[in-house]
Length: 331
Image 1 (cartoon, helix red, strand yellow):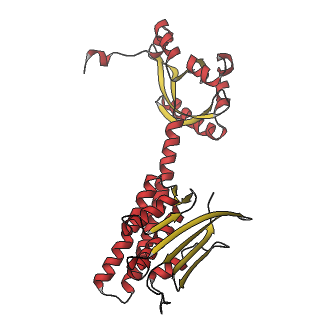
Image 2: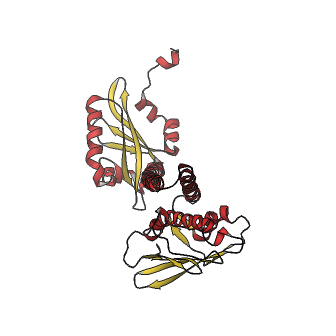
Image 3: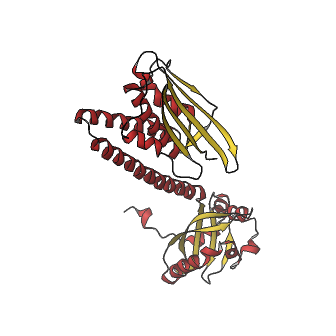
């Protein structure tokens, strides 16, 4: 150990030195000194600028009025234990700023000695409000992602159960399931790009349709610019994927002349703004009503969350399949 490291450090003596006092006054942290009688007798300029009070107002125990009421007992208990044991302490608490707002302070206290005798504590504090806010936001995001991941896995499980339960060759079932997974993955990419909040409807529809309409000449999109929630984005993506798959196999996209129009609009009703989206096929083979309902048809017809007034209607009209969606649009 070096000679310097073994030298005693008399903090109280140093605090009385003009050079140290000058540095402490302008230090970018909150500093206060507490005497052995547990009353505070000095606060640096940074502290006083933060609280907007004078040393006379803060001295003694006056500054404690600035601690958030919910944190006072905890702060007092930690400091009391440290004083009794003559040990350093550390804790976070909220302190009232001069504008009346409370800020989180990371505080540390070190015992002071004068000529080998305990003389009180020197305490420093750093404003960590932004750091705590960032940590809170991160926790909220992780919890939200965890919730969404569970929902996604539930969707995947339902797709797998329905896809492989249907009476079809295994190769076809695997191909069908792979297509559904790719559609879901594409939607996840869009949600990540938009911070898992909202997705532009036109981008959602265009991205979902692009693999099955490479030239962009057979599927027409028409509607105003608007955004939909993450939950609705997943539902719309899966419904459109099922419609596209059916159109390629049996409908308007199974020949060279068929076309699909996807249109949407919004309207205001007593309950708020609503989205009305329509998928309409034309120019494909003659349509007949299927005898049974597969996963795709059932999903499309039941894709809404059951809110009052929501409707999802799948019609096998003679000139082409028509799907009409009428649902509340989140603000």
